[in-house]
Image 1 (cartoon, rainbow, N blue to C red):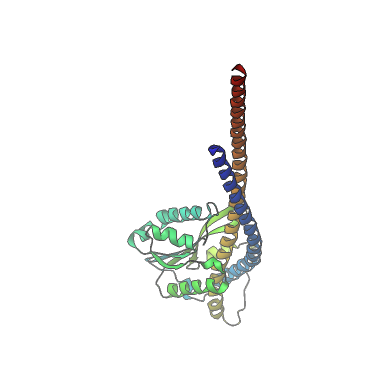
Image 2 (image 1 turned 90 degrees about the vertical axis):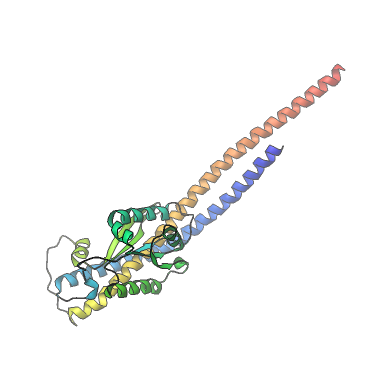
Length: 297
C-alpha cells in the first residue's frame, strides 16, 4: 500500500503542476495579445522613419556626429535584450548563444582586449553575461516589469551621447524578433554609426526615381532631430519585438509543459491501477488460501 500511496502523491503533484502551467499559459496568451498590438502598431512607424532618414541622409551633404565613422575602431558596445523571467523555453539561451558566437567570430579581439562593453536589459541577460565575466557597463534588471518608451529612450540617448563623445565607435543591438508564437528570429543589428546606404538598401523599392527634396529648415537641422528619434525607435522596436517573442515563447513552453503533465498523469494512473489490481489479486489469493486451509483442517 505504501507504493500506492507514493503513486497517489505523485499524481496529485503532477495535477497541481498541470494547473499552474495551464494558468501561466493563459496569462502569457493575454499578455501576448497586448504585446503584439503594441509591436504591430510600432513596426510601420519605425520602418517609415528609417526610410525617411535613409533618403534624407543619402541625398544631403549635411554632416552629423551620429554618422561619424571611426578610422580605427577601438571600443564597441553591444546591447543585449533578454527577459526578466524564465519558464519561456529556449528564448534566452538561444539568443545568448547567438550573441556569444557573434562575439567570438566578429568581436573576439575587442573582448580579449577588454574594449567590448555590454548593456544588458532584463535579469536573465545580466545574470548570464555577468557569470561569464563579460564587461557589463550598464544593466537594467526588471526592465520588463513596466515597459515604457521613456525608459528605452533614456538608455539610447545615453548611448548616443557616448558615441558622439567617441567613447564607443560601434554599437550593436541583439534581440529576438517576433516571427510567430512558436518561432523567433535572433537578430544582431548594427545601429551606430548610421550608414545611409544600408538604411536605403533595407527599405529600397523597385523605383529608381530620385527625388530632389526642398528642406525647411535646412537638412542639417532636420537630421539633428530625426537621427536620435530614429535610434530611439530602433531600440524601442527591439524591446517590443523581444517582449512579444518572450510571451509567445512562454505560452508555447507552458502549453508543452501542460501536455507533458497530462501524459505523465495518464502513465501514473495506469501504474496506480496496475499496482492496485495486483494488491487486490494478492489479497484475494491470501483469503482463498486461508479459507482452503480452514476447510482442510
